[in-house]
Image 1: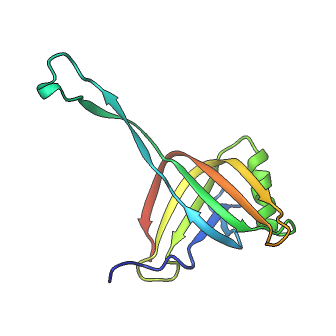
Image 2: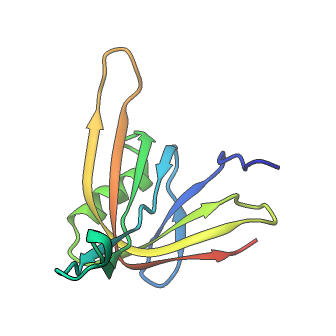
Length: 143
């Protein structure tokens, strides 16, 4: 098989701070985690063949970006507003292939850095949400 269908992927937030997660409804697109790593340049006058040299630096857990079919009355969508306003980190999950034997879950702590709402005249209301990951995101087989 050449790939997997992403349909059904879920974004969840910890509702209690004690590992009780609830699905955020009406998410239409998800991207991330978009992990990165710094490259520290260590080039010197005696670097072989005049090529730059690098060593590994700090890692960044990246971000998760969501697009939602926005419903201002939806309690999950309202919770994202509350998450944006709070000062503490919150735990989130991204469940890939839920219910499938190959289900996997990303677990990470993060903070919402961007919430953007759109109200077009000829389309649905949308919300974009960016979650900045703090620390290492962990991918675990959960199926």
